[in-house]
Length: 82
Image (cartoon, rainbow, N blue to C red):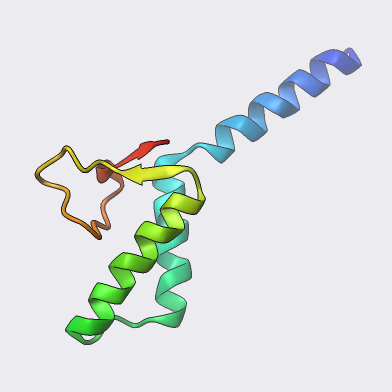
């Protein structure tokens, strides 16, 4: 393998891993769940807000145009790349 091919392969792999919507959602849910068990209504609302913020940090935005995706949605199908 040529060095240029190796670099191209590495860049392709990193790009593919960095933009996986479902993986980002699972990562955010796990990260938020560690600090918030979501046992009360207030904790559940805080969890949803934290997940939305985490997804924004990873380059995704909530699809506000989708009626099935309210503010604080925790379903990966409700998010789109920015």
